[in-house]
Each structure stands twice: as C-alpha cells, then as structure tokens.
Image 1 (spheres, one colour):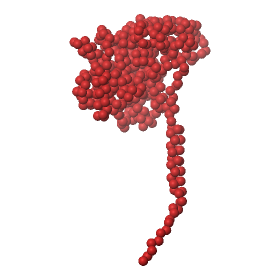
Image 2 (cartoon, rainbow over the protein chains, first blue to last red):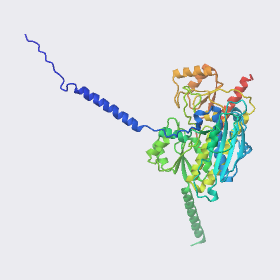
Image 3 (tube, rainbow over the protein chains, first blue to last red):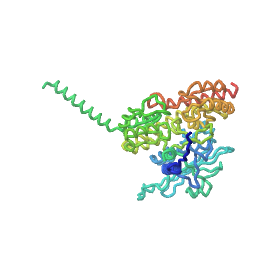
Image 4 (cartoon, rainbow over the protein chains, first blue to last red):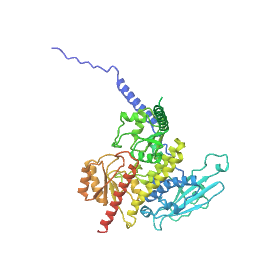
Length: 210
Length: 308
C-alpha cells in the first residue's frame, strides 16, 4: 500500500504578487488623481467685489426682470448717445416701448417703477443717471442706470481708451433711495448701493469651456 | 461686318462685363453662417442684401440631439463668419468647425455674449440652472441683435452704419409687435397667473410679460419623464394649482394627455422657434404665435376666475 505523501509548496514570489498588485493599484490611482487635477477646468468667471452683487442669484424674479430690461435698454440709449449726442428722456424711452420704462402690463407686474433722468456733466465726463423707484409697498429695491462717457479723446486728449465702462447698473434694497450726490464708484458704495453684475452668456461659456 | 453683327457683339460684351462685375460684387459679400432659426432671422434683418446668410444645417432638425452631417462640413468651409447661440442648442456648430478644421480660422459671434441670463424657474429639483433659451423672447433677442450688429460692424466696417441702422429699425419693429400683445392684456385686473411648461424654455418669454413659470414638467433639458417622474409631476401640478400647461410641438401627446386627464388643466402650445423653414420673418411669426398663445391663456384664465 502506497503512502500518500504531502508536500507544502510555497509561492515562488513569497507574497510579492500581492505587493505588485497593490503597487499597480496605487500607481493607477495616483495617475488618475494627477490627470484629474491637471485637467480640471478652472472657473474663468470673474469673482465679485464686495460692492457688487450678481443679478442671476441676488435679485428676486421681479427685480431681475427690471434689471434685464434696463440692461438691454442701456445698449440702445448708449448707441443713440454715441450717434446723436443726446440722452433719451424718460418720455422718449416710454415712446420707444422700451422696458422697464414703458408702462405696459409687464411694468405693472414688475413693481410699477417710476423713472427719472438726471444729467450731471463734469468736465470731459458726460454723466447721465436714470433712477427708478418701485410703487410704494412693493418689496423691491431702487435701481440706477448710470452712464459715464469720457469725451476727453474728442477734445484732443491723447488718451484713447475709456477709463470706465460706458454704463453700470446700481441697486439699493431701499425702495425710495435717492441717487448719491457724487456719481463715482466710491459715492455709490458709501451710500450703500451695490453694482449689479449680469451673469452673461460670456460668463456661461467661460464656465462651461474653462 | 454688318451693323447688326457689331451691335450684337457689343451687347454681348456689355452683358459679359456686367455679369463679371455682379459676380465680383457678390464675391465681396460676407457669407454669414447661422445655427438656429431665430439667428437666421436676426442676421438677415441686420444685413439685408449686403451679405449672404447661410444656415449651417438643413431645415427640420431638432437642436437638442443634432449630430453633424458630412454636408455640414462642406457648408462651413464657405463661411466668412459664424453666428451662434453659444450657451446651448448649437454645440454641433463647434463640432462642425472642428471637423472642417476651421476652428480659429473664421470669427464666431456669440450672440449671447452680453445677455443677462436667468435661471430655469419651476425646476422640479429647485436648482438654479441657467436657461439657454434667450432666443424665445423679445427683450433678450433685442440684446442679441445689438451684439450681432456690433460684431458684424467690426468685421465689415464698410457696412457698419447700415447694419446698426437696420438693427435699430428691426428691434423697434419687434418692440411694437410685443406692445400689440401687451395691449391685449392691459386692462386685465392684476391676478396671479400660474402656469406649467413641458419644456423649461419659456422663462425669458414670460419675463417679457412680467410673469414666471410655476413648474417645468420634463426632468431635464430634452429628456422625457419616466413613469415615476410623471406621477410625481402630476401630484405636484395638482398641488400647485396651475391655470394652464404649455406644451410644444415635439413633445409626445401621450404625456400631455395623461397630465390633462389626471389634472383637468387646460393645455396650450408654445413654439421652441427652431423648426420650419429659414426666413427673414420666421422669428417674428414664431414669437408672435407664442405671445398670442400666452395672452390667450391669460385672458382665458382671467375669465374663468371671474366666473364668465
């Protein structure tokens, strides 16, 4: 009768395979983490200053409607001033059926804002303010569409680039807030106004594409 | 040579020279590509006969799921400039440019560059998602028309004044069109108007009228709801007490019918403005139909609330 013999065979690698697999897993994880880090799209959307708010997220839906109307009207008011050197009056804007000035059904639903135009020329600066206040009792803030046109170039000054955006929109949560005496950033900021920044298509493209 | 022969030769010479001059004149014209239908209308109204407007892709496509075709690549190679929405619906344009190796070779005008975007209202998940349907509105279309006109004026300075003048005339026309529908509802007493839309594409249109969408039915852009989501939606619509549901042409009737049967709420149609033929007045016709549907719904909702 043959006796069964037993022999214990130990793995040739003596546990090295486990180490290899573990090492490979760590290598894959590290490579993935590095690639993900390198390929991350940095948000190219500009951050806001402390005196700025974002229309998209910081205004209520009715205020956002007023802002969007104002933001679109600004392009045309600005263009007409460039061509004809006049600031359209509130009556003219109503006549042009431009929101948020024209008194239509949307105007009624969006706070019935009363608008006022004030011109404040200062040296080479041509300044116009369109200030809007909602009807009493509405939980909406005040808006100012501010135009700052620097005509220094036209007067022979060597400077060719404008030092300021042609227009800005400012917001104050108080419905009856009047415009500050000094139409500078500091004047607005110290009076508690916030500059409203649109979340634009350009911002969205930068966010998506990096 | 007889006089008749001389006259005939002279006439032929004049025709040849004129044709050549015309061809050269046409050769100078910018060829401007557009993606979605409204952009064809915007650009055509801005440039009139001083440029050639060329739709990038054929009629009758669904922008939500369009895949570039070989003929699109041929078309893009003839363009001098391309106008896109750029924030949704026409990503295919970039794919076509890439496939034709035209990226960076022609200027691309992002019509939404300066548009102030708003979130999709009534989103079932209460998330603040950017709404890319800026072309279904008069106000945000006007902003885009100004952006396109300004960009074209830089590219084609000889016609800059002409483009800007046409843009101003066109936006006035659009504002008048909107005013006509504003007038329809001018005397309605202030009331709460609650509406649901199948597709989350009408926030800008409703914003034009000082309104807001209460709920959006489709779970995500271009996606159809599952049975579970539909049941959840029906429950939510019942709770929200909406006056009307706006559906659209391409949405399957079975969903709308189910919602109508379960809730009893009236259904009206809005257009996404991205179908049909490419014409200069396509946008005006489409947006007018939408404004009519919206104001009809408002008048009807008011009559029901007044018990008429």
